[in-house]
Length: 206
Image 1 (tube, helix red, strand yellow):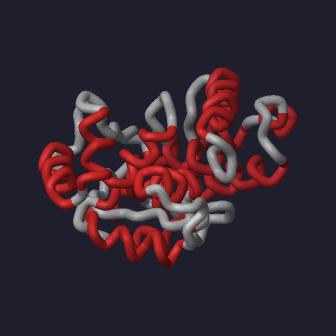
Image 2 (tube, rainbow, N blue to C red):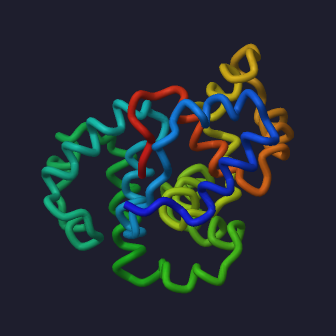
C-alpha cells in the first residue's frame, strides 16, 4: 500500500503550523491514508457508511462484501433486495446502492474524466446520483482520488475530533469548523484523517 505522495510533506507542514494537531500526528507515526483505486467500491462503501459509526459501517460492509463476493456495479445491480437487507442495509440505502450501480452501468458516471476536474466539479457530478450527497462525494475525493485539501464540514467525527483536540464543547457548528480549517490548508484532507484517527482504534477507510 502506497501512501499519497503529499503525505509526509503535509505532516511536516501541519506539525509546524498547529501544535495540538501536531501531537495527534506524532501519535500515529506509521499510519497513513490509503486509497482504493476502484471508484464504485469507494462510493458504495461511503453510502453504506452514511450516518452510522465507523464500527457499525464496518460490520455492515463485511456482511455485504461476503454476500456480493465481488463489489462491482453489475453484481450490486443484480443483488436481491432481501440479500441486501440481511446485511443490515436500510430500504433507503439499498435504493441508493442500486441507483449508484445503474449510474455506473449506464455510463452516467465516468470517473476517467475526473482527473482534469476540480474538487467542486467532481462533487457537482456525483451529487446528481440519488443517495450521493456532498459528504459522500467528499469521502470519494479523500479516499479514492486522494485529493489533499478536502474538508468535510458535515462529518460528525471530524467535528468531534476537533472538539477533543482543542478542548471545545461538542459540537461546534459547521461554519466555525470551516473557519478553523483554513489553518490546515492546503492539506485539510490530511488534518481530517488525523482527527478521525484520534477517535478510532481502526483507521477509517472507504
